[in-house]
Image 1 (spheres, one colour):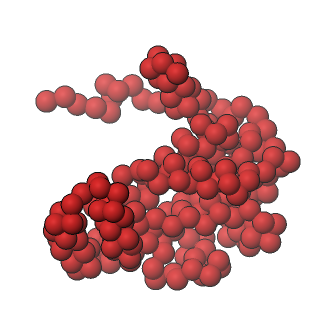
Image 2 (cartoon, rainbow, N blue to C red):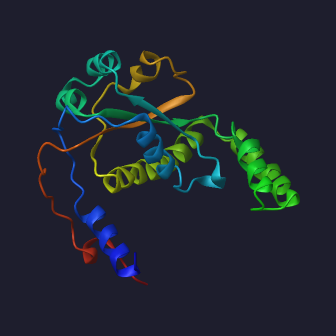
Length: 212
């Protein structure tokens, strides 16, 4: 595929994205393909590459019934989508630091001494942050991975809808997660759209950008 076609495909993905409320309930997403979508999403950047996100793929009728109690105003998305992905930020930011940087050394992405320096700097930094500062950090990183997830879904032929209207104070415990560790970021419904969705207006760049 040449660069012109690649650019056209990308433009189709970003300009055709809509927040979909109704999906074709007969269309399911296989575990294998969902893993591909999530893998592509996790290529998003994060502070010091710590990847402090956690995905809960809610797809079974039982899990959806639990979610529906927490997100009653998003019933259509919950009931008709192939799945709803709950994105969480992990406040134990450095949990996978050794694994991430060790693998980077193994693959030849960095030498051992660089790994040691990066971990010696980043691990104490995150461990000494206040809870509020940790929340701010994982909120940014989890927002980046969420957007990439939605674009990846479109590239696979699915549509999404990011949702914030749910009982965030209850969702972690409702699904067996540690509420003091995993903070809810958003819900993302995913599936085959039952309709095209509505277009939406964006402000012109001149309204939202400055050059100095």
